[in-house]
Image (cartoon, rainbow, N blue to C red; front, side, top):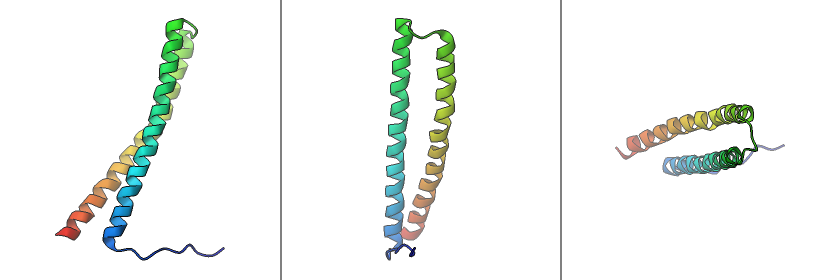
Length: 94
């Protein structure tokens, strides 16, 4: 297997690529959170209809809490990445 070819980039282009990657990751996280919100809405409807008992609701709530930890952690990492990129950009611009 050959090594991937990495194109020549200026520092400004590299920073732009990093900002784009942050934006794409933010979009992916938004889709993930939206999917969880849709599940919550479905469960809320089931609760109103009485087709889900309190024990099931509590188990679902625990599941959502556990699942949402991952995007929260990812969001914190993206914030650090964004701060680093912006700091570097300010340093380059003087």
